[in-house]
Length: 367
Image (cartoon, rainbow, N blue to C red; front, side, top):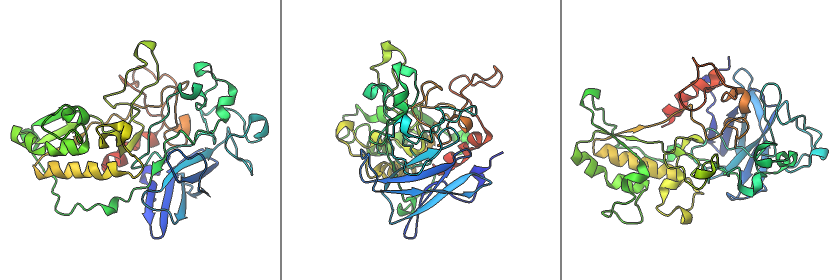
């Protein structure tokens, strides 16, 4: 059984002296590269770096990139048994010219596709959200049937539209003086609340911070006056603001609740701004403002509880997946076949491996 979550190497992007160490788990990959980008919409990288499987027991791939640091934008490209690497390969190589292509999916469920840039599942922040399958006529999707897709879609480079992961230096934030309240459960008064909805229409706040981390922080004293000892926030992780058009009747409705998570380690960037159409998401500032909000609540004696559902995913089913959560694709992330009635959760999808099941621990610890 893979034990990646108990490995000594920290997964994700970790600033080190002179650069950044990148580490990712993949049991079935045969090659993984880190691509560094200058802007969120860049298709061409400023540099690329081949990762090495430095921990063969726990299937951890690593590389240290000199000169990288907080704010560096990056993504992964991965090859596996169904799509092997060939020297000189470039994104968007046509099928008849890509000698490494074997199949879109193999018997183990692997869907490696180096044309599709991957976000880091351990990223603390990202620059945007995954593209809707319908956008671009579906050409950024890897599946060959959904939305009338053709085999050529699997050979389209997605880097220009895929969100980039952002390197965050957690040690740069000072928690000095912060004290987490420790209210006994029997004395707790818990307020379940949606972060944006709570202050979006609050005219007592400046219009510039309504519905944001700052707006919520500004109401900490109000909550304390009510006697609230803990706020239970509906999901604040990254999730698509727009779901795929599963039903024509709801295709134009935004996703508000946030239960279809894409990045379990990353605070939602859209809670930075009241007007998300004019907000910059390139610096990872959402991490700092989330922490500032927590500090403000702690100062009023209020605990912060987070709602998270690990069996919900924004990836969709096998025929609709937008992205691969851990660069290993279906073989070791979530189940793509229907489980038995005794194991199937009420909503969402069950994990496909023990590695995925135990991934909840570091995700919770990170927050």
